[in-house]
Length: 212
Image 1 (cartoon, rainbow, N blue to C red):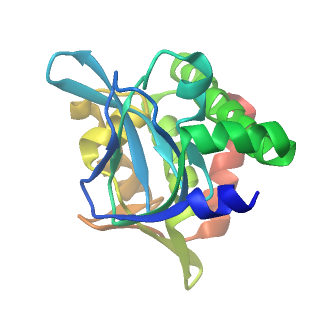
Image 2: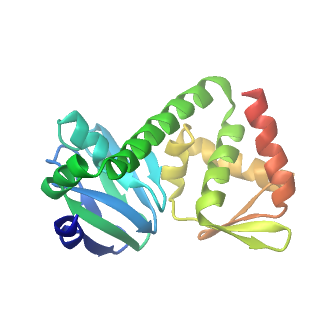
């Protein structure tokens, strides 16, 4: 494992930086230590759509490596981010002699597939308002800090990306945001989202999950 330790490198990427592009060969795996990364997939030339939000502690690249077909998406840092970069050759060597390390990446690949499956089920079974609430819940867990009885989320996402991740048209999300603000569930500005009562919000989430 000494060579593996030496091969790892810390990577600091500014907001907007691209880790890899759709279709490119997989030359490294990544662990996100701080920040946020969004995976985008092209549905038409020049029309990338957000398909997955990667949060700190999660990995990138393993699923693409396992499938052997190059990167399925483009990974863009939506905040200044810190990652651990592991060259593929060294990662494959390390996996052979250190199964717990391989299991970390397998766990994250399974989690990514589970999130995408759940999103499809939500699109089928839940309304757009409830899907946005569940996205806010995910963001609160990763980017929120306590503020009084509520929670303040430092929002790394553009409205267009939020709409895609919640499975709705871009024009729909503005209407959903107005509804949540009118209900007192959440308040939005350009950089932050305020959940005024975390207890009430969690009850809201629990109700949605039970209905779904």
